[in-house]
Length: 363
Image (cartoon, rainbow, N blue to C red; front, side):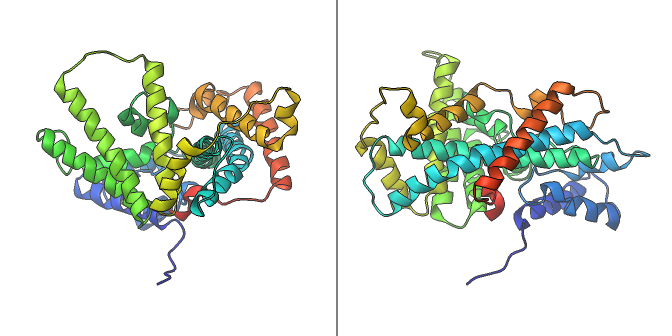
């Protein structure tokens, strides 16, 4: 049956759970209704995170007055809005076309499978990390420092490192409130591997009551189990260069995103088959074709996404942000100019293209 659920229910449920559990563990003391209500309803991160513990939030309310980081807030917001409107929303139609075609058994050609999987891999990162950047920016404008939620996750050299860089606050929540209470790594290898597998399966189920989400989480859990077995084996026949291990990790994560995005297993299998059955693209002879042909412009956008992901600094490093509000003066004229340009490009794009909701709104 159709059930009307409050917007953002999963995230403010996380906040209330962590509040109650931390009181039970005596890590924080109970607070008054005013501060509790402010913590639970703090709007910048209410819809899609970052997930913030009350122990991180309460000390920022304790001072005689709050510090506002205006330029830092505008800069973070501008970068996040640019990621969402210019990058994620431009790549979204490529991913939508690919998955819609796979759902009806459309024959793929000209590298459509690679293009579609890459487009969604970039889209979900730019969309979600863009929201997190905007949330941090709004927090700084209100004098509250939110935790960093992304740290260049696609540059990770292993699945375990990926989860230390992707949706960091969710990974920490699952570690502290699910994985460690089940024993973590303190009770032998079997217990640890079982805890990893169950934790990641629950992470998949949290995203939606569909078997594709469960499979996505379980396969990530299985990859983490394999990593644990490899470490415990002590076998070191060879050490891969970091660039190679990063590439292998990225390919694994991108392929698993197919299960996350596909509506059912038949669509996911069609996507995977497309990697082997679609024809390779014929590269244009003239450079002008890259700009004039819409199909080749899509490859340019994918290349631009790769450049942002693998070359540019993450927003927090770019802004020197470490999860605390600092007095004005940390950012300079260059950051202000960059924020202005990114805001202009974002607003220009919003007037030309249809608006899309954030990917994580549905969770």
